[in-house]
Image (cartoon, rainbow, N blue to C red; front, side, top):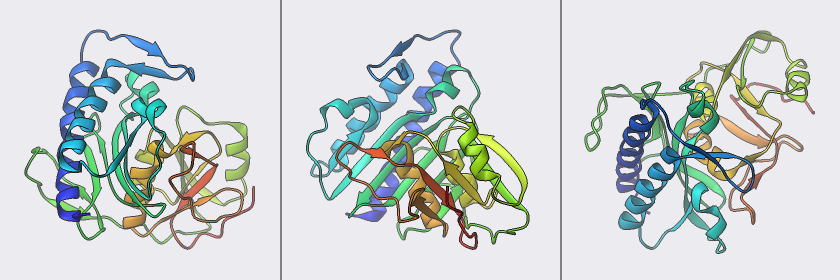
Length: 265
């Protein structure tokens, strides 16, 4: 894989998809449909999926592509693949809360090694550069010309005063009970893969997810966090979270900055 080209293509497509999403987001109204798994989907999901898929297939025709909106057609599994959630946080989008993202990642040998997370309503753009270092680009964003970037890095956690981020739409008692095992100074809620990015920038120390997610929900954020020095592990045995599973479903997991002693659930 040509990592320089990959970074450029993923970044540009994420920005283009973000523009398409915001055009619908800022409209007076938009239709919401329900998929077979009871999750919502909008015209923004579909438009962004079509745009990103076309661009990735043109740039990397020999690389397997997995996307949320086309997941029912994915039967072949590859050791290396591109994986996309064109609009992560559809519920945040529908409720006009702004915490939604465009996620594009590249997975190699079960590990998401490159990724981009773009939050168009928040004007925040995170991605791994060609060397695998995670950066945040400072807007305004030009689609085909990268602007000023700042390297991001997880902070050294204060284990007596941890900063926790948890899901905005999927918070439950089990999550609260798990967080209660730690000494927490502050807890914030965020939607979509932004939670990984908040750990990556040092705005939070850890993010536990005790709920259903799919690989396309997490791969890009996982790559960004990994490129900033963080880790993502399974909740049950604290082994690394891997990708390319037969059904693309994730177990519960914990994303965190090194220095935290993880508790058992």
